Length: 455
Image 1 (tube, one colour):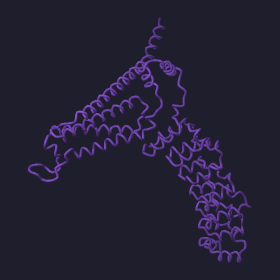
Image 2 (image 1 turned 180 degrees about the horizontal axis):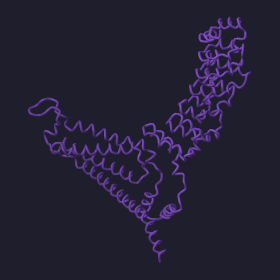
Image 3 (image 1 turned 45 degrees about the vertical axis):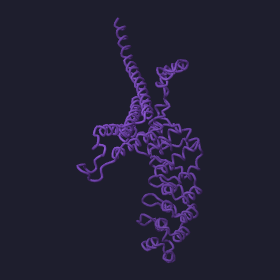
Image 4 (image 1 turned 90 degrees about the vertical axis):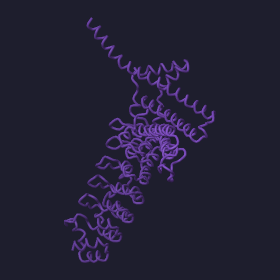
């Protein structure tokens, strides 16, 4: 007879259920003695058989608290499948037997967790209204329900659930690893959720919180694979004022002296101020604009590539005399000029692509070496682009004539690039020398102390 009951639950046959109850009024009471993993109410809740579930609940409300082999109640299954009407019936008729909304399965998940993970918003609201505290239960994974929403990218469910906590609590809520919601959004690169969280003042104000490993949200993002999403996430975090853990630590006393010296150089000359700025600049504007900076060399490389395959004068597209199809017209007329054009254009493309590789590879742009490399790369790209331009003008102009004004403007630009490259190179060399001298100073001091001790 129990087999017929389970068959009726699979199809939601209310008439068959009533017939079985009329034949044996204790049939639902004997379910605890059967070897089935789920009760008929579990099956009806999972399949959405509302009338069948209502009759079973009316006859035996305690079945709302029955557990299957994974310790899930019928409300767990109905919530996971988004069966709103059955959820409402289980809450209404099953609440007399206990807190049906707060029951945890073998993984520590309540029906609220399952509804949020599947983003059944109406079910989620009904469960929260019945028992808001069930959403705050911590499952075996150690993640809060908010962290789970971030992990599974359940943005709408997250917005509903955040109303259960005040702003201060939202800023401090963490998982078992001490990760805040901002950490979770950064790890999973959830751009939409990240922007939503940063609009909450308390979360933005606590943006530099560290987890149990002493890492901020920006630090954990650095450990993730680099792609366009990570670059966008990094830019959002930096614009919100999120720093790395190393930048939060106070400088040792030995490092405070340059700052004092910098304040004293404010009244000195222009060179002293510029040098002090070069040594102490910590605005990290290059790091913040990494994603934007990639565009410039990429555009230069694309232009150089297009110019290389479409040289001035075009290519031979019809068989004329002894000329080969596809050859550059300029190459057939003046090979020396063509070689110069190709060389300048190739340098432009290769240097630009090299800069793109540096920016994408994630090298720390706060490092003076990479700043120097990018600066020289940009200047060399400009120089070779100007050289390519002049070479092209000379090729297209009658008898190689180029307007003197155009030549002088280009020469002035090239002179400015050379002066800028020289200044940055001098600054970089001096900076390297100072770094090396500082490293040798402790060794020299130790040698002196050892000699003094021997005396």
